[in-house]
Amino acid sequence: MKKNTLNRRDFAIKSAMGLAGIGMADASQAQLKEEQAIIAVLEKESATWRAGDKEGHAACWQARPYSKILITTKDGQFLDIPVEVMLNPSPEIFGKGGRAENSDYRFSINGKSAWVSHKEVSYSPDGSSQESYEIRMLEKIKGQWKLVGQSIHIIG
Image 1 (cartoon, rainbow, N blue to C red):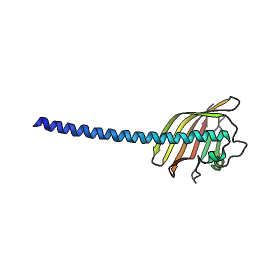
Image 2 (cartoon, rainbow, N blue to C red):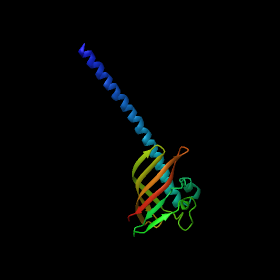
Image 3 (tube, rainbow, N blue to C red):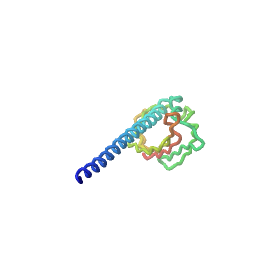
Image 4 (cartoon, rainbow, N blue to C red):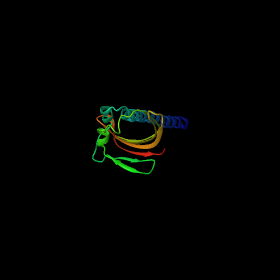
């Protein structure tokens, strides 16, 4: 009798653990899907800025009353850029070519809000490079992730 009782209890515990494992796997897949969608937006935003694709770049952004774009330059200057610059950049700062490589993504996704940190190496058309650490704030709007703010720290 006792042996069957233990087996039933063990079976119940193992079943519950198995179901919890399935739930965690589903949550992990959902997290990975959101991370991939966010990376796609960040990569698009980097590429459209360099390519001078104003419409494509603006599509990555959503202006909010609380939107902020903060930049610390290599020489220690602090810049507070209006979000409108991301939506309608001037030709003097936009579309100069080159490419960017983003890496070391770290995510905090909470429902329809996320912040992501990553490293970026920007390459100018002449081959020179600049490194930065970036923090990006995003919101999911009508099923699409959009940037609402960022903080860029140029390190080299």
